Every structure is written in C-alpha cells, then in structure tokens.
Length: 384
Image (cartoon, rainbow, N blue to C red):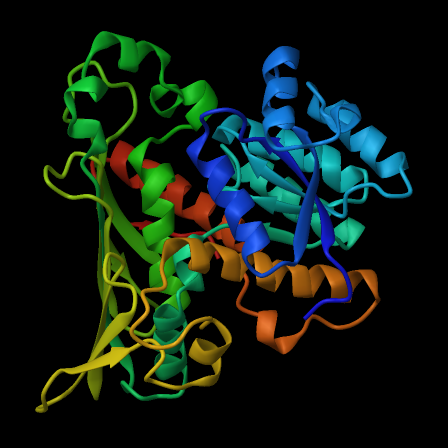
C-alpha cells in the first residue's frame, strides 16, 4: 500500500496510558508505521522504562519533547511523523515543536485549549506543508463513511434534522466523585483540559461526527453547560440546539454523568426522502429508513460503496470495531504523508481524514458553547 513503513515517534502514552496503547495498535494494524522513538513521559526514569517495555532504542527515548524534535529532525533516519497523546494543554506546544522541525503530526483531540492556539497550528501546518491529522476516531468506521456517502449522493434527500448524542457514565462512578479526583485528575483542571470538560472531551467528537456525515455546519447554537457533581470545576454535561444555513435543525447532547451508559455515541440524520441511524456500540450496522417504508439494516461487508469498502478489512459477520476505525485514520494519514513528501496530490481515497481544520472547527464550537452558556443560554453565531 505504501512505499515503506513510516518512522513514527510518540509524545505521551507511557506506562498505563490507555490512549497511547490504542494509537500504537492502530499504527501497526495496516503495517504502515514502525514506532522508533518517543518522549513517553516527562520523567526520565518513567520515559526510559516505558521505552524499554516497547523495545525502543534507549538512545531514542527522550524526557523532553523539544529535545526529541531537534534530535529526530537532525537524524538521517529520523521520524517522519509524531503521534501526540498527551493531556490537552500540551497538544499545541508539542505540535508546534515538531511542525517547526518539519515533522508531520497525528494528534488527539481536541486540537488545543483555545481557538487562538488552534488557528496558529493550522497556519503553521500550511506554511510548512505538513500533514496534520486529528484522531476523530469514529469517522473511520466503514458504516459511518457509507452514511456520509449516502447523504452526499442524495439517497436521503435534503437534510432536515441532525441529532447526535454521546453518553458516558465514568464520571458518575464513586471514584470520580471524591476530593482526590477533583483535585488531581487533569480532566477537571482548566489549566490542562482547557475551558471545558465534557464539551471538549466528547462533545467535540459528537460535533465532528454530525458534520462529517451530514455535510452541514451549523450557523447558530444555543447551549447549556452543567456540572452535576458538587465542587467539579469543569462541566460534565452539555446540551445544545443547532440551526443550519439550509434551514435544518439539530441537537447535540453529551454527558459523562449518564448513569448506565458505556460509550453511547449515536447519530440520526433525517432527510426529505429517508433517514439514517448509527450507534457506535453497534458499529457494523447502519439503519436506513425511507419515508413510508420499512427500516433496512445495512451491515458492514454486505453493503458495498466506495467509502465503506475502502475502510473494511475483514469479511462480513466478523466484528470490526474501534481499533480498526482508529487504524483507518492512521492509514489515511500514511497515504497523505507519502504523497506530500513525494510532492504529489493528496490521494482521493484518503480525503476524508480529519485534519487540523476540523480541529479549528471544534475549537470554534467550544467557544460558541461557552459564549451561549455565559449569556444565559442564548442563541449565538458560530464563526465560519
């Protein structure tokens, strides 16, 4: 698929870090990358221990991401791309260091902790002509991509309504209620998480998914943030009403206090001819219901379309889920990196990769949510 494995570095993601392991698995799934260097922790001992566990050359284990960027850029066999899997406040400074060193970036979301940081990253990525991928994982599912294709080809008619929800319950657990969590967990610290909690953590995922499938961006929103837990600094619950330029209406609900919910990301898009429904916890199926007709269950591997086929790896009936969706973004990024480095156009088959521009859109969404909430949940305009 690609000329060679890309040399991958990682910042963050050391011992015990869930998302670091997810990135590493995703990078290896399609055999497009080899992890060769890392600043896996700011603590030198922990960084080296983590690197040793991953069989990295100790000489390419760094305790400082700036040193890593300088050193890897100077090597003939230096990394091609870095994966950033740190708390939110480090996304912008780490990405800046590697972009300035001429290294491509794959970054967790949200892009940054402010719109100004996000726009600066977008400008820098363009100026250096570097690929900047953002891991909005759920856009990698075959049936999500098929849904987008159905909307784009007019199969559901003109979009009238877009409703998305992302419900989790991990912050409702007893361990997330005590004073220690409130004082030490970075998700509750504005200095590390940014100005929002739930809105930035999973609200941006929901917002991206709604736009990815519907092809629409809202022009106005009305939002309320809330924290159910006494003493919690940042929000653990978000509800938003959306207006679209074409007259469509929508809602977005995200909560990490939804008792009994695991990772319930769900999307419904209603058109003038048919509707679509997707449930992330059942990612191998998509429901298509024509007006006046019966609901049709479309399944991965049985339904065929260009977008779904490109993102499908195994035969129908074999569950294909989160890690494969994550890997799809890594595959798309690899195709783009090879193309950019060869001075070629971005391959059409990788064009749906979420990028730094999607990250900027997410930061604009967060800013509009904050503005609306501060104004007593009034309608506010979203920046174009």
